[in-house]
Length: 64
Image 1 (cartoon, rainbow, N blue to C red):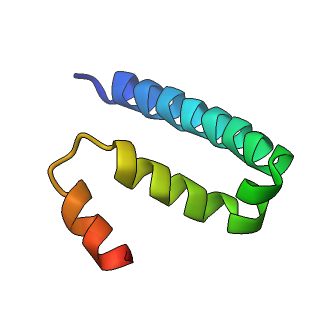
Image 2: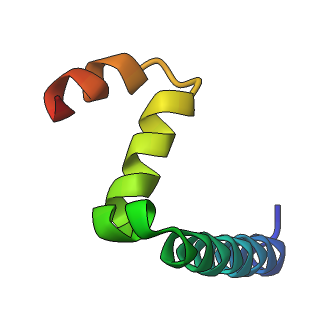
């Protein structure tokens, strides 16, 4: 893969992630319970609960 294509893909991924994070923050600020928990903590709990990765359960143990 060319360097130019890699850079284009990285930029597209970066822009997409930023867009999703902005939407997630907006969602969390509209709900008082989620707002009180802070966006980063809500995101972390969501990732742990719904992740299909092999480390999700191990990580969950450390957060309890």
